[in-house]
Image (cartoon, rainbow, N blue to C red; front, side, top):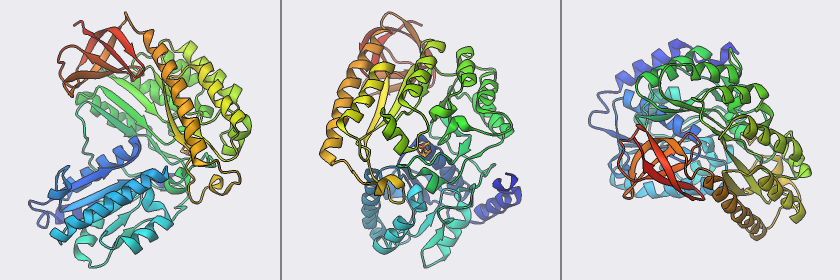
Length: 461
Ligand code: SF4
């Protein structure tokens, strides 16, 4: 696996190119727009770091920007359409500022049919780069500035077996107190509806030392909430297994929480559950997607577990890790899903009692086996199931939250929003409280009222 790591000499070369761009980027601004998951947010922070290294000042206002990079998501068609519409809106700005550069990266950039569409229909996009190319951004910007033609830095899909891991490029984090740290990339599971293994490549893990050093530095710099990220985070396979890595991170001195996202049920081992139970610094939240409740559908999805196995695992986590909240992902209307199959999904929801469900209507993704399966479910039926699921979940979420009334929870303040003071608990619950607490500071809140997706209380410090 050593060929996975980008050589230090390549990183040094990119830093030299970045330094050489400083004359061209005096008083120039760059903007990174992010669509999709937390992995994309983390990637955007690396892109922003590389842009700063090139000399750009960062802005969130595209009308001020000389470079706009759109970091895209391909997980659902809706997300892709939003990206394309956002790209279309930049055309007018480019007409006003002819020197403006527009770049597209992320999962959509890895899809051949989308690249061709962008080439055909979005001629004002100046450069495209893939998910393995962030460390080469200085070179990409230099090429885009000097070339009259569109520049493309994409490793073909399916890109090399593993993809790459680059270290030592700067990261410009959005928040000064909570952040994500990618620990592995890619996925080997090939769920039949999912585009991720096709666009992000096979699993590869960062080294234990690099992760520990990064988290140590974050804690020293005052970060309080650190999320370990990976498409399949608990299949981390560096010098230690994921539970070992998590335990060592929790042992770093300091007052902080560590979380992780996203997990596959097959990797939610007893060892991991025990490590969570023993370490209060590991946030009391487990996101464990189940996707569907019917065994035939789970098999068609290639998920690798049965309804019963999932329920047992989820209940085991709840029993062993006291006070934990569980969230999940569900797909409504996977091909051939009947009403009675869907009732199995509702049964899992009732049996487990999730705190939060991220539910989606099934969206066919080009290149995946499920997209060409017979028995596609009509859209209206998918939406009906989605609504039934949401209704059931709203009741469950409220019941789960009512348990917290009368308890005092440790809450990390997110400052104020719309005249309310809010933060998050270790369970990842939104907590509203009665007086200002500085952003990024822990406080104690006595919970007085429960809502389905929020708790309300008084600061007791
Ligand atoms: S485990 Fe997650 S990322 Fe991997 S293929 Fe399945 S749904 Fe996609």
